[in-house]
Picture (cartoon, rainbow, N blue to C red):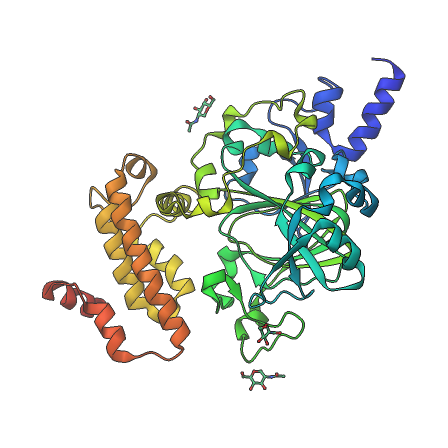
Length: 420
Ligand SMILES: *[C@@H]1O[C@H](CO)[C@@H](O)[C@H](O)[C@H]1NC(C)=O
Ligand SMILES: *[C@@H]1O[C@H](CO)[C@@H](O)[C@H](O)[C@H]1NC(C)=O
Ligand SMILES: *[C@@H]1O[C@H](CO)[C@@H](O)[C@H](O)[C@H]1NC(C)=O
């Protein structure tokens, strides 16, 4: 390799870590699964690690510095560029009004051009799937190009404003990578494995907490005083991976454009990602339009969700016995412990085929869909009950007893009463 090529490699490396080296500086740095060098950008936990798609499995948020700088969007997406696109006159985009997210507000639509005319002097926020004619400008994050993961893609969204937006505190039931092309985003991230019981999701329909993010009322939300959060600044050119279920609140600064990609966590955790191998040599040129997205509504594939949830707990979190499961769910629903126990008992009846009180992967992997369906029914039924109870605020004792004892044989009622 001549000096020029080497210099190019070094410069690109600074920009984009080892994925470039794998591709342009063949053999120099990184091989096998080492797609990217990443920074774990967590307060007090900075680590330099090696990235592989396996890190997406049951893992922690990761910040990829400079990961999307080679996307055309990074340099091309000026207002002039959008303005001069022939589609911009007529293409309708979804737009929210209000920099501070209020999910009671209705979104509206307007042409891209109308949005461009107004957004710098208004509180308009474009939130919509990335238009087809812009997809070629955005590189698909390399780890997601692995065939297995690519099959689980749900949707790619564009987020465009003049800055100053503030989201609610919420979580997604999907995995998420968010790449910033203009301006800066600030993420507050909270680990659900540690703090689920401290964050009141008083809007379960949208998986969010109604707290005023500018003025936290600790009388209404006392748990928030005990939460430790991670603070991550995502600058233009960076991408942030956020695992499903992590609580997050997002603020934006300056003319702000980001694109995020959601994929199905439950489908992806069942995959053997060691089949991914090296990224192909044209990985760098593959853009969003090269991939099929299933659409976010696809996520309601019920069996995927329960299978994913249970196997994730059993395989990665050491949650195998009835007691373990009760511990997990009583974190979230501590005030309803007897009901949690009842739910876990019912779920074990379906899933614990050898009745040894332990759920292990080999057993779960061969379960029939019928069993999963029954277990899923139990989950849904109890989820309804829990949220009804939480929303009611005060317990209606009669109703609670009815839920607790209904459909149990007298023998079971007595056992349950003994346990309590
Ligand atoms: C959100 O919008 C609704 C309906 O427009 C309004 O009634 C409510 O006060 C708003 N909430 C906040 C916190 O501004
Ligand atoms: C906080 O919430 C409590 C209970 O809802 C309310 O009484 C109090 O006035 C609120 N505090 C502020 C500063 O708004
Ligand atoms: C995953 O695939 C690799 C490579 O094909 C194989 O060696 C490994 O045994 C597989 N792991 C599982 C858990 O199937």
